[in-house]
Amino acid sequence: MLKDFFPNVIPEDLWEATLETLYMTIISVIGTLILGIILGLLLFLTDRGNLWKNSFINFLTATFVNVFRAIPFIILILLLFPFTDFLIGTIRGWEAALPALIIGAGPFYARLVEIGLKEVDKGVIEAAKSMGAKSHTIIFKVLLPESMPALISGLTVTGIALIGYTAIAGVIGAGGLGSLAYLQGFQRRDFDVILACTILIIIIVFIFQFIGDLLSKAIDKR
Image 1 (cartoon, rainbow, N blue to C red):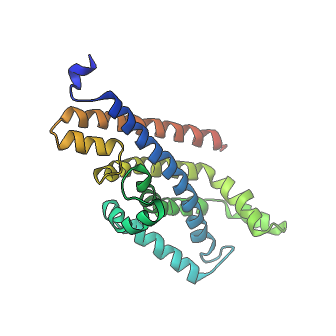
Image 2 (spheres, rainbow, N blue to C red):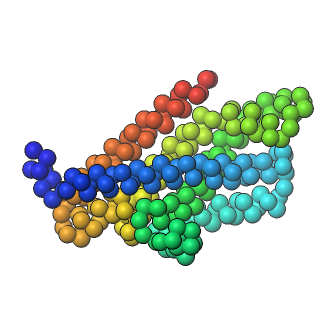
Image 3 (cartoon, one colour):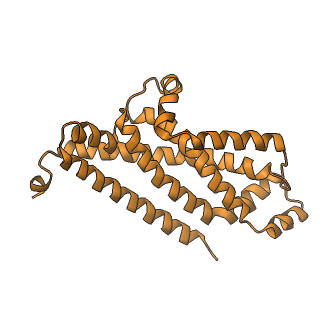
């Protein structure tokens, strides 16, 4: 029955490509979470009126974030080839896509983190300060927990964008469903392969969105 609709699809290749896409997405989401929270905290904390007010560091962080948000992902991959080759030892395969995926998505998520932190009630922060709480206590016991629903929602949006990035990376040899759709689908004119890859990417996006919504609702106590 499946062969009738997808005559040119090789199940083993489709399964391998799906796993590569999942690997790229999961690992890059973890890396993006770490990088995005660090950058987002710096943007928030060094801004005027906040704990680490420092206009110079805020300017540098904002510039880094804005520059890397502005570079189209396909160009970013090409720009990072020397760095990727140095770090990973190759510019091909799903592992080689990770630096570009994380550096490409991290600044985007950092802005969402900053927005989430700005939504935290200033009164809660002032109350913690008045009780003598140190900076690290305020960050890890007040700011991050209070903004957690927004952080998870932002990570969900970023993760879905990353799934799209993996497809773009696949076109230049990163593997995954994007590579399969391009090399075996588009170049060979086997459009059933493209359709199969598209369906699987949509399924992955729906699953990711469902998990993100579930976590956000479970954590949000409002």
